[in-house]
Image (cartoon, rainbow, N blue to C red):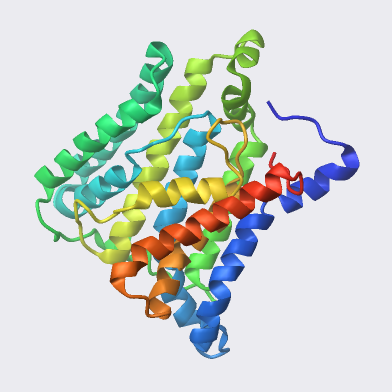
Length: 324
């Protein structure tokens, strides 16, 4: 449940809850700007920022889905497999038969809602169910699109290439998604109940609310954000690949934890998750800019992620930051 804060501290806590992910994003961004000054050049910033941040949007969407799962104390270990499957559905099915492709995506949503009910009724850890589903999603993806290829619907390609005035499209989308996520988790009864289930499910049930209904709704939204991530990724790459979203599961979990979420549930921050997701995306870009050998990139990326998570955990344990 949401714990009451002193009225004078509540506003400060809400502002500081995203301090660590915001600083992490800034720390990753500064050396990139130093190496690529075009990012802040008045005449070239729009194009360079669009190119740099575009592929961060699918990670943001996947991280918001992961945030929802972690709000109730669960983790979706099939996120990357789901996102890859959706690119295959969009590129190999939706492009040829929109009705069949739409039915396929609706079926995925239904499966995710059933997963939420199954986890609650059988009291099984989500790690078991979602790892099992990861093999199913990958098998379906390979069956639909065995090798990279396919074509995305023109509307999807166009939607990911909009050019609003002045502000690059990825920044507009990131801000919009952060606001939507924050409103969903902190301004609606659903968000209060979801965080309550993650923090103390017995108190939610004693108050007359259905925990199974909350879990079904949460996992339905997890599936929805995973689908949106796959659509966005497919629209950016204009092709399908059964392994296109490799590492999305780990990146999304790291983004949520960096953004203030906990594995125990109950404590999440949508704004923090968006900052964390962009930071995770830019870590990869930073390694390329610094010309780190591909043999070392995986290890360096892991070290940076662990360091950022350690710093965030240090501040929280010290009571400097309180996530609500």
